[in-house]
Length: 313
Image 1 (cartoon, rainbow, N blue to C red):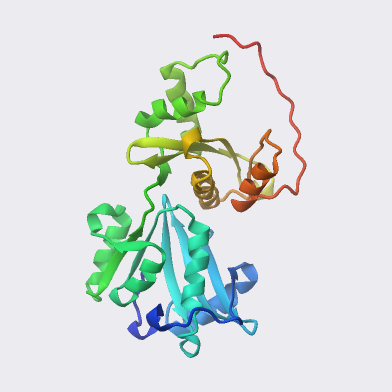
Image 2: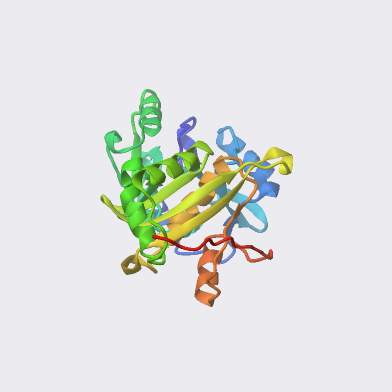
């Protein structure tokens, strides 16, 4: 769970011998107030702490003191589990397991990678990870692995995959995307030509947006679009709008929509968006619970004015 192997003594002991739980453990997502304690924790480990907007830390507390942390980083376009460390005096108390459970819940169906020591392989297994060869990983992770193995030959690469992959769609996938959109559009909506579709896709991408697809193999099961909007407030930071959140009917209620929104949210953060917003006409409790589970809140009022032209085929 580390990509900067500076101190092999810092590798957490195997969680195999940890008790099932310790009531005093509190695991939560870190906020800005926790950055200094996390920095001190990693300094004890001998690891430099470099926080970026793409990093999400989970911390474990005992008696209101942060004694362990783990980082779930978005390294566009993938998630990487990094930097698991438990204070030596607090090991064998279920803390590593509790942190990994929190990361597992955050990931849901999401794929993730980790570069770690062989001694940590069982920790990766707790996240549903398996050891993989470098050829199946993104190029930057293959290079990271090679660089580390020059000094630490016992470093391995692991991947978590539950059979669904969310990634930016390629232009060749647009036919499948439009097929999903057609499942939810009125029959009388004017159909776009292939040239129109490619042109609109290019505009989304050139403005910094992303069209995500959820794939099982080559089959597209779901999609959503992140639009990045230029902005004069918030020191010029853009904001994100996510739309076209669609999962094919036979695959709903399995976590695919949440996975799509997770990737849209992390991508918006990586693009320095100060917020990510969406609108929906659905007002059921199930819909509200779904968006809350993906981190969205309904603490603002939304208004709209529609300019629907007469629909023609």
